[in-house]
Image 1: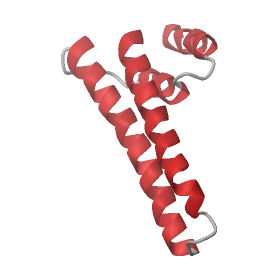
Image 2 (image 1 turned 180 degrees about the vertical axis):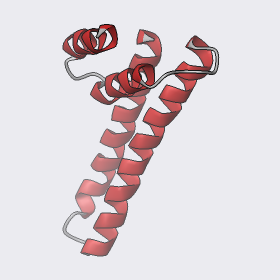
Image 3 (image 1 turned 90 degrees about the horizontal axis):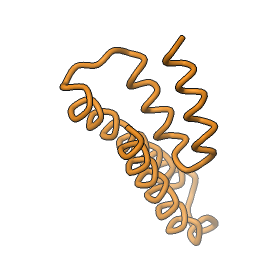
Image 4 (image 1 turned 120 degrees about the vertical axis):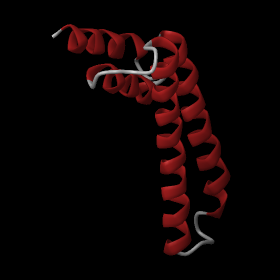
Length: 98
């Protein structure tokens, strides 16, 4: 689980950072409509990477079936990604054991 979480968390964060870095120079040269379209595209791409990560975890670790708690925990860990990884792991482990 930790390998998948790390891989997809870094991939999601990297995609987000690259897209934000690419769009920042055009911040004052676009109108609000295009800015919203870019923003939503970035969010959808990040959410899609989290979805693919949870699906990969379901297929490889759980044999194709999964309950609600486990993918929720994996999704939270992927979203937390690199930020305070150890602290997030402890919180998720407490959640799963409850």
